[in-house]
Image (cartoon, rainbow over all chains, first blue to last red):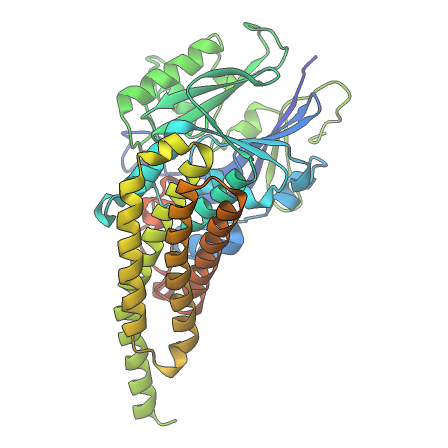
Length: 292
Length: 158
């Protein structure tokens, strides 16, 4: 029986996102739906998120109008589909410092936030560079930093330096340095508590956008193909992907990309009355299904 | 108001936006830098020492921004915007002073002042982004999940 219930919760989407950004190489090969989502874990007395989403109040209109991001719903509505309120969230793992992953830390007033030291250090360094280097900061919002400062002042921003086991019971984090961002991290949930158990799940942040990054597009000749956007190197992205895959015995479905629309057909899922997908990865003892 | 007056008012606003946008960007960039420094300081004082040079240049930038804002001529329709821009610049300068104080004395009072002034500057800045078009704070053209679209501002969309 699983220790944690795990859901991937969509909170917005880009209906037509170019495939060439999701995967390096296939130019002019059409678009896919790109869900924006975060991961909710419940168990062992904790309510945990992997990433926070962004704050629609701040720049939702700009995103919707200029970039086609649609159907945004805030965490109060999204988490309610699993019976959780934002103030119930005890811990948040920030996979990287992009607006759609850490742009809403102020909406979780009681949570502790875990982020890689190198992500903050190098992000801050990049922010000191002149505007022609702004590619390196990935569309940063000054308000996000101020909110991070507020959380740090309250002792709720915790830096992790590299890999660390059991940050929370059965949950490990791993640094994938100089990949999608300077200090991206992925999160491993050992859902049976065992060190090398079979009930292990990896939450990849943006190290992969789609399962295709782990398999390539030719079933006859599988290969790892990195995403189309990196501050670091494609080399590092490929080896981080290989490491994630190896750690779950090569079982692609256990490496979860939150921007993958096919999660809804890979796992039990349902569409809420607001048009958002709830994907159920695992259920802990005593927890009711939210997709039944 | 007749058409000629309308046109003159529009031109005045356009001139204001054109002149003011670089100042707002300077404030935004400097606020981000001071915020980043504050974040390092809150998390680990030893790491923040590495960024002390950045704080000094941020303070110079904040002073320059403050002077440039004071020198701006705001048409009537933009006085509210100018008020918040001035607020953003002044509180940013206060944040620089607070960051310097907090880097020397690790006391709750200094930390509170730093957070308060950063928050005030950020709120003023955000208000400027809402009051007039052309002052958006985040360049989503650089963001991974929105890099697909050609750079367009809401006012360009028909």
